[in-house]
Length: 508
Image 1: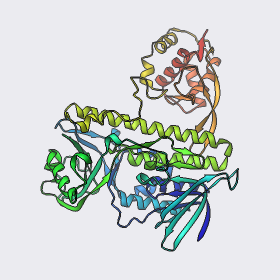
Image 2: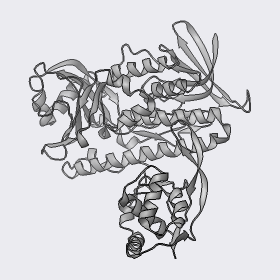
Image 3: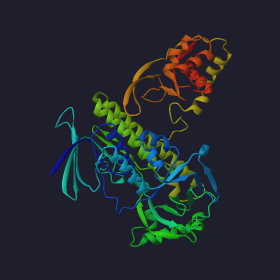
Image 4: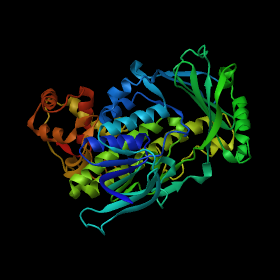
């Protein structure tokens, strides 16, 4: 049996696995990626919003994606709750992408290999031994046993990333939390209309709700669309033999807009079903192991953020892994950031989807909707700010408004450190490393254990440092913009007002 040693071993060659492999290999680590063969697997069409561009830049894949020829998307067309047509174009005429996952995944695998990752594309994982300190207290190793055409193999690694999606090769070993009250199945078929679709915006993703389910359609060319129905498998009796085709046709008949759109179109692939039930994890990482992308959690496709979430998770996993491998003193802090960020991402997107379902429930009085309008295991915000620097919330804070009026009325300002000023060292994320940086630590604000460095892009620590040296706000603003990336005057004044309101600075 062949045995190999790597810095990082990645299970799963979807977007999360390939993106993490590419980054880690390009940063000088030895990486092996295990993935099942693409042949014979079912793939969806998926939407990538314009906000993915920043991630593509971070991952170093923008140029390759731009040359891949994926269909550019201008927005979404929605029939939600009622039958009114709502067309939403992406802001500032930006473009998203409509991709066939087969082609998208192949491209990312190719980029991972070009960066130096060792790809094992026909591997069936049999057993995983999680990293322990038995072999070396300073460099724990894990082992993955898998089968290939050449026979059984084993690879050892200092870090293992579970990027195996819903399969959850490691995630299922006591990490995963299932939302059993809301099981969902997606039924998908591929349709073609050789003469083009009778739509004003042919590149749009289409979304339609109906009595007891919802549907979405992604175009991947001018003539081809994937159309998927999201249904309750218990209510649709999908356990019966040959039920998928019948169920798909039944769900299609319940729609209005999509039924009209597909009238006369050719179905070029038989419908198939896949589990789309939601899950998360009680912990997303332990020493030497991270759950990444859909292996960590699965969000409702309604958000159109599935692939974006996977890529963001992959980037963060690569940063945390790179930090842990190169500076063990930051391993615990890096792992803490990963667990917190994954939890925050899952909870935020779950709340977003729940609100969409609640809106639909007002029109469709059915358990499918009411049962999905409150996310399992996610605490409601009850009107509190979602993030510590929620600008809209702070604008309504009476103490902040009073501080702003004080600044406006003052001919001169005499600012000095306030009674609540504390600056502490906290772990922070950079492009490829976790580092320690100075942040404000103020009692009861922000509502976070990580302190706060930036508010609306204003560097609060730098502002606290500069403020006592100036008597005029315009001079302080000019000096700040010389020493830091420039910010707008409203954002600057807002940040200064917050610092006064929270007692970080005081005006004498």
